[in-house]
Length: 534
Image 1 (tube, rainbow, N blue to C red):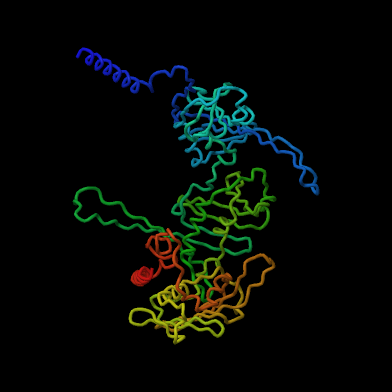
Image 2: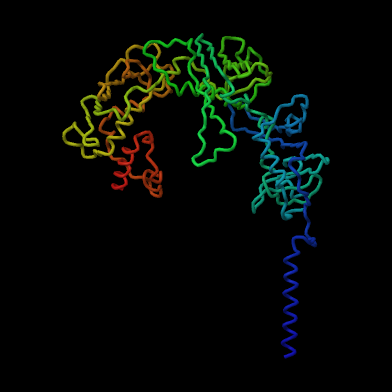
């Protein structure tokens, strides 16, 4: 009995000791295990981040005898400094401290967050001869030095990725290599241009009352904003007492009254509305610090965009010419910086009156169409509404692969058909195949595809003229023409969705691509029909 009691006492003591070990093992010193002790840094206290990006070495290449061998050379390391300046940060090249630029908040925030999260893990190496292999020696490692309001706190070297996750890290001047937890090494490795503020205008469309575009070709577009305030009704059941609800402000952009539209001109109100947003959403992709008015294209005829602010002050943006990479030079009056923006970004803003035309080739709405005829060569397909649905009229005998549920799709595609651009002074499309005819109670509308658009660029995609229902000539891509050049193909049953795509074409039954704008009752019938088939 005494023996059993003794064993029980020993077991109890053992359990207590094990429990104490688990409780205190994280707080107690790890005997014989080295640690890179890093105190948690308050990201809001950071005043300076110095980053040294290792230089890249180009190896000798003797494989291009026609051009001569490429000699090996080493690029020097790049020093990037982010420093607090007032409420924000500036960035500059460590060797050119006189040229300082504002830092983009979208780049700064992840860096400061990573500094606040930074921690270290296990020791994985402690010998100098191991540093090169881990790319963490002074020549290959990424150096990050942090200064806070307390002074310099960290000076770290980051190396290659660790096997178990994370990256390798060591303190400057030491050989002990640890696993770094977090993303500090990854988000810090950016050159000066990547840190610079790329937002060009800190404005919103509603900050302006008017906008004008004076193009290099002499064309001009003028818009005005109409702002309305509407009372917001109080929620049902709300008490009468209390402050009145805030008014809802809406801003609508329209052509200025002074703009005269040509006869038959159909304005795309959506294109007008998008113009102010294209101005305020401009972002640089790079910077042309050494550009002059001549090299940037501002010295010759160029497009200028003027926006009148609610304070009566104008913001004037100049669109210059492209650089050798296809990016457009841009500058804002009062700002010495010359920006480089993506070509498509500039095209969204550099609009003339013809770019604001409504490019839908039919004016009818889907619910107004009662009959549709698709013709190409000797092939003709005619469909019409009947008994709340659609039926095939011609050919009288339906082809083997004809799917009645595709009628709604084909007619919807025709109604929504849009051109790529207006064809300018071209008066006739120059052909009549294929053609599409839509019949409504108001009358018949017909469009016809014409000849191919001539292009000096043989590699350019094919384009064709099209005579719209209103008689205007527009340009469509070759794919659009080819689709309607085979009328019976429009009504074929679609292939089943790939395995694992959740049915309904991989959209989980939430809708079919291209049919979102159809009336809900018609779309519902079509989806139900396809589900039944599947």
